[in-house]
Length: 220
Image (cartoon, rainbow, N blue to C red; front, side):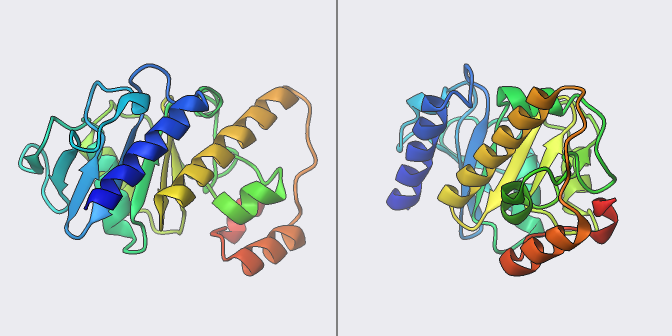
């Protein structure tokens, strides 16, 4: 468990250094068997301590999920949803990073993805990124809705809120969160101009090679 704790702490410091977790926003977690180690509420990701993390039961709803350590973020149901949805997810990153949060306030590009296929890196690394309708932070119905979505994804964008990303490792989840932020930055920089999107054959080639999730309907 010590290694998992240190992994979480180091990821928090990295995201804080990159300016992706302003103030005490954002939360991280790692799966530890049937438990979750999670950043506590009200603590900057740059000031985490390995011996002061929240321990939660993966299968229990609030408030019974809390097992040990300080109080966890009220947004922990989002983490539970991604873990329960996909047994290969072992780390979750949720940020309020500026550009991704800004993009979450715009209409979704398609039913299956908030962002369009504007770069090969977004398609091959993140894949489709569903926009989840707004709910107050900590809403368990929203988390349940994410868990029950009937198409594949690696991350979601919460409307008027920010991204939630799952990965097989913390390094991978962090990398995907950064990719989402940079794609949002690019799209916002384009403003009202209409960019060239990857076409269906280009998307297919990338998703087949990198096994990234992309529903055909999202391509047009």
